[in-house]
Length: 377
Ligand SMILES: *Cc1c(COP(=O)(O)O)cnc(C)c1O
Image 1 (cartoon, rainbow, N blue to C red):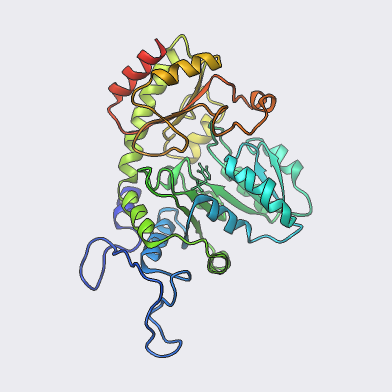
Image 2: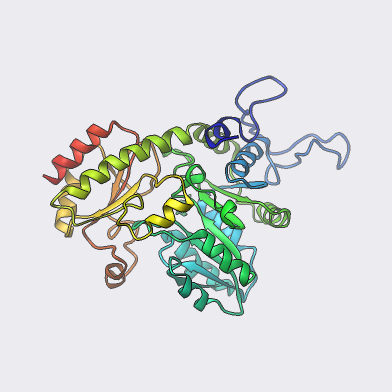
């Protein structure tokens, strides 16, 4: 099945009993057993729920995995995956991971003696040098937020294999439509499904997919033990989102390319960060490991004042955190998502006060272009 068909026919489609073409929302906590211990496969909805199961099956299919898991948020998914490790273990993580992941690793998991070191994973040598005897996993995000840095997943998979580490990939930005990390050698792929997979700014959810039976058993055990599961209504909304994921990603990317071309030639824009640009550091790797460059773009207008002015003038870009929805969003990372990072460190990373991040939506590209043009004018 090709990706676009998978979005429609992957996983479990419809309801065998009634012929309903959409999987019903099984709003239920417990299930009648024929005799004690003899049940239909579902006994209690923390352990398994038919609507959630249908979603878990489709994410496994989309990521070319063998098992999927749905959680109450992206952070719940990441936390549950981290429960695979023991006190004293060490995880090497991409240095510009999502802020919430950084907070979890440095303010919560550290209290359980799970140590994280942050390295530039686009630099294989730096990764190899940071591996210690205690290292159990590489945790990689690609592309990253907000500078869209790219890590070579095949290279990371080779390092992971050599040192017997798990490779965990946060695939939120690329989506399973553009990039399938399990095929590139990752062991675990995860998503904030709140973003592109849901796609309509109306659900908070997390998804995980794996392709080994051993990991599937371990993660299911943790999911059931910890209990951070997704409810059936939200699972259903995500399945609905997935049906149009391919269409949305195509439309979003087409719009993004037009905006990037416009921003690239604008005299008030100092630099544009987009992996689809040939001058982007990670362009070749991105071209090799993914089939699209996505809908996130950042650009530098030189100063806080210029950024503020642009934000106050745009009409169709909603000032908000989050990303990946049908409506275009705009943010200033230095003041919003990355405000907790000290300014010196931010400048070092390139997250300046004049840096603006767009999550491009599916509006008419001409309207978005006109809007940016007048706002920059
Ligand atoms: C939003 C996000 C998360 C966290 O997901 P939530 O659904 O907000 O809990 C993790 N990783 C990335 C890359 C994200 O953008």
